[in-house]
Length: 102
Figure 1 (cartoon, rainbow, N blue to C red):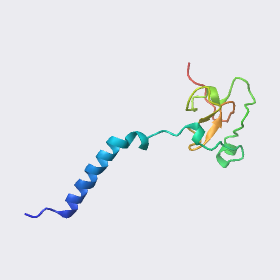
Figure 2 (spheres, rainbow, N blue to C red; figure 1 turned 90 degrees about the horizontal axis):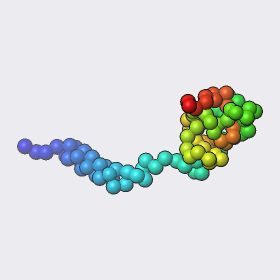
Figure 3 (cartoon, rainbow, N blue to C red; figure 1 turned 45 degrees about the vertical axis):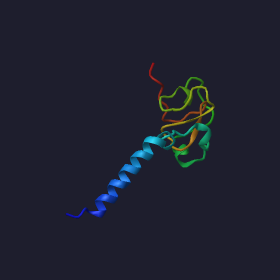
Figure 4 (cartoon, rainbow, N blue to C red; figure 1 turned 180 degrees about the vertical axis):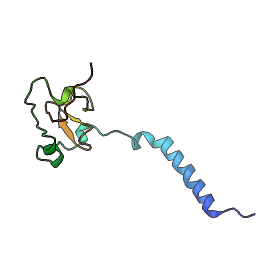
């Protein structure tokens, strides 16, 4: 009985991929740091739709204490779940603001 070359190739690639993910997985799944992300512009289409501004009009409502902000507390620019691939100003605000649960 001959072995199927397609099956053999599939197994070789699968094993190679598993080894690669196991040995180098940390670099493949490294989350983006806010410093690596471009800053969200107020005139960005999605930012404009959500009325995003770099400086919150209300002192107690800003991105820094919003449930949607990500990244490290204290950073001036941080990732936000609403704007993937871009960093928002921690002192900013948008209409989707949701206070962090206490």
